[in-house]
Amino acid sequence: MEHITLLLGIVIVTALVFDFTNGFHDTANAMATTISTGALKPKTAVAMSAVLNLVGAFLSVEVAKTISGGLINEEGIRTEVIFAALVGAILWNLLTWLLGLPSSSSHALFGGLIGAAVMSAGWSSVNGSTVITKVLIPAVAAPVVAGLAAMLATRLTYRIGGRADQRATAKGYRAGQIASAGLVSLAHGTNDAQKTMGIITLALVTGGVIAPGSNPPTWVIVSAGTAIALGTYLGGWRIIRTMGKGLTDLAPQQGFAAQTSAATAILASSHIGFSLSTTQVCSGAVMGSGLGRKGGVVRWSTATRMFVAWGLTLPAAGLAGAAAEFLTKQGTWGIVLTGALLVAGAGVIWTLSRRRPVTVDNVNEAAEPAGVVTTAMAAVTPPPAGPVTGDLSGDLKTTIPAPDAEPTRPATV
Image (cartoon, rainbow, N blue to C red; front, side):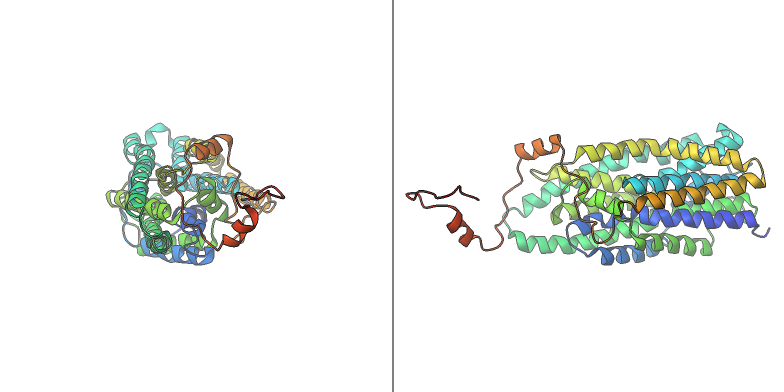
């Protein structure tokens, strides 16, 4: 068994950096609805999510095995290919984070890996059947299934609780939302932390450190789980704002339905080794819950931008990975230049993000005003009337005149 070389060590560190970006990029999946409905304070939410992401990393290795031994052919793949793939995935993650778009970190990794492998060894290096059955089909089916499930669950919760006291049920649904958010965080660790485990395991195989087909070593599981937990705790506030406020306005009932549907889909896919995008699943569930509530609407301008980002992720990360691999093939100077470009690109994106920062203090502000279509739909199907909160009797007496009295000023209701 060979020792870990300097290049292999750099690849492992880069993989953990990707895992860290995956954590803060995907925090919104578990906690956006919980934060937007006020079920948990933002800092409490991300801390809870971070711990459960770490726990989830130890529950399964099926997804890691799909990446390390199924997506591309291990024979003939150099360690530099893994490095190039990670560079493409990290840059795409940071760019979509800057734009506040909940794109797929998973597909960014897959795209970077496919692009780098094709540049290195041609199309024969990619297992097309695995890409179709375990990446592309789940990418299309999972958000649709989660969205439909969330829409039906939302309608069911409103039908069951329609005659109940709204304040009492809201408290109950907030408690349920916290539990379901924890389940999504656990599922995220089970699915997404394994992607980095798989990529590090693949790097160890290409470097001759472990045999092909091996499970991830324990230290790989621990380091990947820790990296994604730290990234989650950092909080990707830009994407949390988009998921929590940009797609639709959520009540606790909707948040509970969305998160429960998403967690079920993610855990089921992790069990059978489907490496789906937790971002797409959770986004689909949020949109489904928005459509499931009477009068609830989806901000389709935001959703359209999100769909475009979904479609671009795999090819864009693939092109970035291929370009990075083209440089690494030139030798040591190409590897150094690729690393320098990664650091420079990350620095530029960070600098741009400071112009309009999104923090824990303003994460619940509206992401954007409602568009014409959204406003029209809300006017046609108004939300169900809820209980009146607060003592408004004094205001009503002073602003609405008696039937026989002549108003001295326009009424304000």
